[in-house]
Length: 525
Picture 1 (spheres, rainbow, N blue to C red):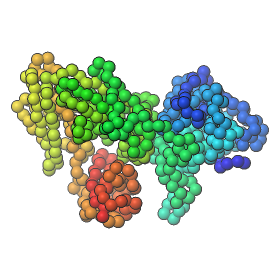
Picture 2: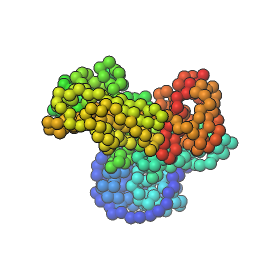
Picture 3: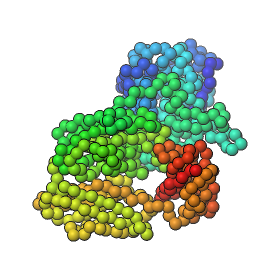
Picture 4: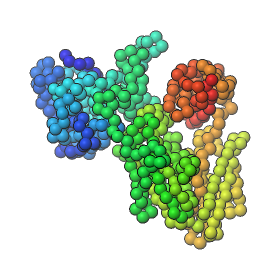
């Protein structure tokens, strides 16, 4: 039997009705093609036909379900030079050595084992149309599980092994590496177990071959089919001007690699309210099915940072601020979070925004600091119209704000002690007397430093970090670019974290429990 056989198991059965297959393509100009085959297929003369022809029944999924699965798989392969299609004509037009059919079917009995999917590693280049299989009934006909399994099996055909877990003695403890976290930023590796997690992405880790074999999923796939060209420059000099339609604008792009940033430029001709929303490609509310965690940065004409916006528990980001006349730059970046590494935060995004009419509030600046656990906020403003009141607002995600206090017009400072150690976002709102319109300051973020139960023995380290904590935390160690170096857990009491592979210079230690996150800058000598 040719190749290496992969298994991807998951059980449970339900039924769906069959409907017309929509014809969809993710990147028609690409030569390499993966065909998602939902309408049944007779398979002959391939490495699977050890017991004669195979008659695979139609999947039974609706057009809506097929479209969702296509969109999920297309986003998984968005950064690569490959077309995901549901059109058989496109598949047959592709070169034999650059195409793969993935048959989604409830028909599994011919194989003899109850598994979610099967494929031969490297079969994308067989040239004899040996397909990959996804057994939808054994995946419970769950749309997300079937989509993840399609990406998984197609990944095998492009040369990927499983992402596996090995212990310190080089004993494999898990064939399928698992993810972590919940909600929008809950994550799982596509070549491991990603079922039930919102973020299902490629990964770098030990694969099934051995405890010393590190598999970079993106690198392996790219060697076979290449990456898509970057459509926006990463520098201010090469910034893409946004296309204005009146006071509105929109832009789209793809974060292709870990180091990719997309830079856009725009002009503010008179002081104005600037608002944007940057959203990753998704298939539903709450960024469902997205692969990209977005950070946006706003820079002035000198390249100085006006603000950075990256809500900790959300994948989208937004800006709502007043800007003076001048040239500005918007930088879109894919970043890691508590569960997802920066390496895998890639994919398609869309930015929409507006530059509103001239404002009666010309200057409105908010600053903040933390002292003795008190959040101290200061603000200044200049206005051409009388101001009725100033409201101080706060948010846990940088998007949804609530009023904290009505400060009046004579007060320029407010302080309070939040009942949380989480990061909080603040902005000031000015209400004019004339028409009671609302105008907003910049947004400022306050992140408490490490709590009193976290004590670093020293910020200068050589080969290990020593710290004492009052409770257990998950930790991540990142370099100054945000690249994940290592991760694990610390328990209450004394801990020693051995540091591997970090270069000299600044590194970041991030500690996270259920309701709080703390970060400490360290200097590796």
